[in-house]
Image (tube, rainbow, N blue to C red; front, side):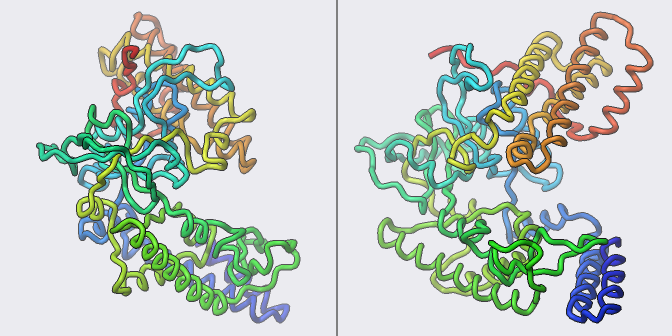
Length: 492
């Protein structure tokens, strides 16, 4: 691989100038990437998803689904768009995992309750609020049992005591739930699960698990948590040519030029200490929660890219933490579904609108720099809704292909990554170009569809352009444009 090649060249360079430790690290990188390549090709047969499926089939892990393109659901204008994001996510999951999913990772833990809603003033300040379904309703109607929210979302209403009806669930974990004639509770804790929504009796029940703030901060925060430790590999300083990394964090306040050389042994010792601290934090948190409120659960989710990518030693830490927790007699490791099956919620709670982003709201994805992207997305959503209302999924294979590609371009346009890259100034030009590109291609597909269905001529150059588009954005081949139909409720 390129990495192995450059590791060898770096080693020769370092040896020539007498820097033996850097030469050792270069050889270590060669061995690292050679091992990963062999593992991927020979053990996993170039199929990571199949490996996850085998682990799930063996009941070792549980794989959740998510929205098709990680669309930021609360800010999508049309309920049909939310439905399409979730249903295509389920379809992709079934294709790769061979079963229906039971849990859903909401993109950015972003949630919106049942309410009258209008686009925020940054997008359009002229629309009258109209009834919208809560995110949990889409999940319940599609057979999903649970999702995860950030701890600050518990600022919603007081928990209502409920009981679960013993009814046919059609694959759902629970039947309908009903209120108990008792006053609302006042004790809210992130170490219990809750049924979600004010109108929970109107749809299949869905539970929320709450992200633990303490363990999340310790693992995720570079400033206050484990990844920023002095001994760990510095992500941003790389050696050219090859882009390999040879330096430690050293001090978060230091300039990159002052970084010390990385010691894998020192880093390994620190993962021992941090895994031990994580175990202690989990155990003491659960003990305190148990004393206050009975059988607790601690949910600690993270972006997978943290482990091994941003935090190189994160996989070492994760392996030790899981192993040591599994060996502790006072703690039971469980998947979300295992926990919820054994300890179903006993209360329902109304959650507020929000996310796990900065400030707990939408500001990372909606601000002065990104408002224009939402205006384009909302315009396209309205176009798609009208296109499906007028033409359905297409009267023949050509019309169907045009409409299906319009649906693909809309899903890609809705990816929340674009706003994130703009707001964080990570790759704003690239993100803007992707939004513009998918918007332009979407509009072309809509125009071609309408012209074709009116019997108008599609030029040869346009057919060629459509062929290029479908080859480039060849994804979601089973998307159903009818998912984007108008799902608006009557006023209430």
